[in-house]
Image (cartoon, rainbow over all chains, first blue to last red; front, side):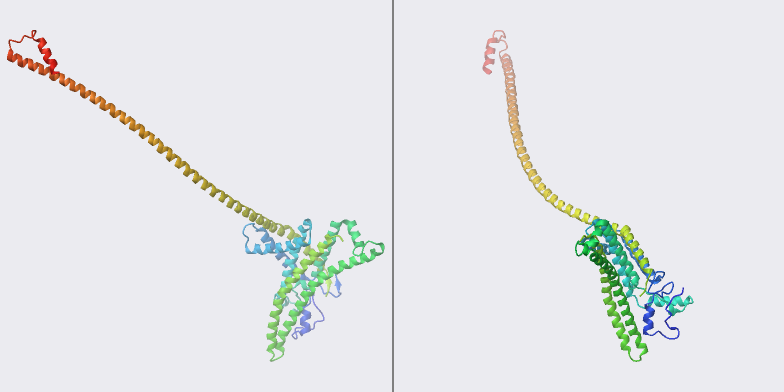
Length: 294
Length: 157
């Protein structure tokens, strides 16, 4: 497996400087080095590994609770899953009025919430824990450990978040067609939002296209941006904490690193929950919009 | 930031997970929730019904008690009356039996006394005749003096 960022200097010779540390932490594990900005032959193996295993873990845990679900007195785990289901169901009921659509969209929203929450929660693991274990394994396997890349937060990968928002876009298109029919939707595409007049058709259509693109891109970008920034701040805090070793007598930096890391991690609990919730709510809202005629 | 095929993989994984949740997670949980809601509704209705039933039963108990008390009183009254009747009848019967017995006894006693008197009379007459015959051995002729003796017997009666 040839991985890596050739720009990195030989890290075996010296400890990485701040820039190298951050670039190393922001590089994905891929099966082949990606040169172009967009390359559809490359996979981010770390993103896939963590998102799929976390997703499977989430749905299997919930399925376990569901299989043992009883209408009698629920256990704690069942009660927790029930709480989530009721929360999602009440939100879905308020936004999507078609009970038929809710049969799929409500479970989808639940999946989105739990999955994204757990993927975001990977950010709370110690920053260097898994990458260092991977580097050790990579080194033992006879490769250069400084080229062992591993990013553990799938939602800090634009591909993951855009992938999910694209799935939501596809569902929006599907429900537009299903609810309004081809004719009804075409009519809406050309007459909304400004009105039915031949001169307004192109403008309406352009606005609709912009709306779809903007919704999808902002949907994915919002989650990605929050998680990427959060991860970056953890890196900066880690760098601050590590700086004390280099500069003699400034143990204050180490203490500062501990305090800042604690505060940011606590604040991050709020962010990861909030972002998961926002992504779920926007999913419901966008699919709900596909049900409504202008 | 690079865009690559991870995006489509994520898209597909997302839809598969959502499908899985729809198939295996959502329905049992929602069913359990609905069933529990129904159970609770039924339970509350049953509790309400039980409360009404209890009130009814209490009312019925009071009614039954009152009825029982009334009928017991009736029974007692009629029993007392019947007892009175029986006692009266018995008293009358007893009086009758006593009277009858006394009458029979008196009659018996009267007859016995009469018999005794007659026996005694016979004996006295015989004694008198015997005594007289002892004394007057010869002078008294049975045939001659029969009328005299009958008179004497009559006087003794």
